Image (cartoon, rainbow, N blue to C red; front, side):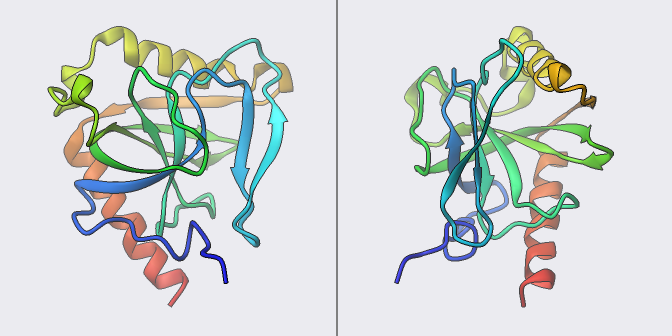
Length: 177
């Protein structure tokens, strides 16, 4: 019997402040991988049409549920590529709120708990402004050549992000009793 990464992996004993994340896409990739909700396998959704690359490792927080019927997305900020389907303990520092295809699609912003190069980052404000600019531009542009629109509502700090993680944990429990 295999474990399903969304349903059988813990969000973490210290969630919502310190969460487990499962990577889907490595930093620097143009390949859009996505969790297949039925099988738990990672599938290649597409090659991004636009000539842009993921500015961070990208994945989801297990045992969470959001308005888009998916687990809660997470951007894992580090200078290193993390392989897909890797379990990473992450410290939540903020959130980017966006609308994708008319649905809310929040992106939690986090730092790997075991990365000494980012251990000094505790809040969104500790990041160089360029990092948030790169994230914003990537998500504004990555679907343009598909003729799809993404709207970035803004970046919010640690407390708002923790509230969103906590709500998505509660929503998961309600959805998958």
